[in-house]
Length: 536
Image 1: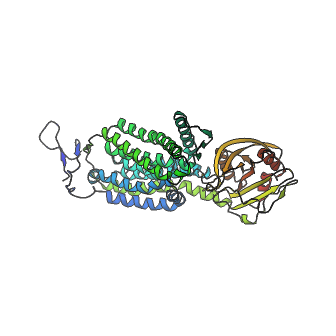
Image 2: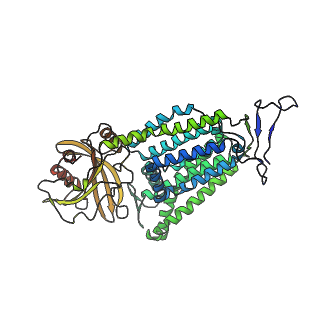
């Protein structure tokens, strides 16, 4: 039974209402909570929060749908479906708080909302999907702070902060994780005396060749381990230091363990004498190894577990008419302030409504290059959300075939797929990225820097040069491209941008790929001029 008792300070008489402190204790195991399931005011607060959630879901549906799509499509974020149940469990653990403390709506967090909404607008214009989703959760946290009040928000801080794990973030870490995994693997093979040749993410031993692909980077293990570590730390520890230490273990151990996993798979192939022998089961080995790592983390964590005392000193609170009026005013005001950013984005989008790009023609290429029908079927990038795509093959005397890919995009303030991380230099099923770099080129008489990517399919190698054309400029980096895109949208400049990739074979030493691509760019129509001529 839940008992709320008042203990006098230095005397035997009970304190008057509103004086002193009260102690809130969780009920003994197996006994029900006495009285109402929630303190006065919770029903109204939950109703306002529910309406606010519906409005957020409608207005920010693109961000919500994008997050759910990633949960479904990426194995690294399948665990996001468990976040809301985990939040529910953490709230249930704090049911004594909910049963005894009334929400105390407050107004001062309203000053934070316009800034967050403005940041959301900037993230939308820069097309940073993770930032948009994180800011969406942050704005909803402000709504919760307004509805519950600072004291109750603090008492429920752990479950409320867990909502940030709904955002599928961390994909930008994949290249770094690939490098760390490759370095651990190569170092381990060297210590074991196994002959090794390493070329970027490709590791070759006498029994076969292995690739540290993006799926092998360990992101899924790392993200899931961080979520588990935070949940375990909140449930098992009350010391802030112990929580931080265990979460740090949850970050570092999976990174190192993933390197050992890759090393173990290659060593197993070495012992069995064939790389193909472990190819089919390496994913199963990975999940088995990750399960073992989690068990080890749990064993370590339980060693330092603390008995959680759910008795919380509280000031007695109640739900009054002024609080109800404040909730009816503050929560709708918070929602309206959050909608400033989406409203301004919609206004910017209305300036340049999409035009029918399907009627656009491909950029031209001058002599000595001529089009080669059906020569471009072997390689192509994989992009999302383009308004129009062109894939052509060209050949010149004394040169191999150069394949050109052009994707056109309408620039939108509310976001487009020009710089989405889902775009790939090649189909992952057929081609594998071996190395990244930069190349200095001359395009239409002007120097430029393009991204250089080497892709491999079996014994075949191709060199890919790629770049963006935005607002009259050529850019190879995502940050620079996003800034150019933001300038074009805010200043209402050229509303169409392009992603361009050209590739040539690296298999013929008599025709270097760099030389082929350089000659092709010199003969190509200036793409800044091409985009300026498209209908607006």
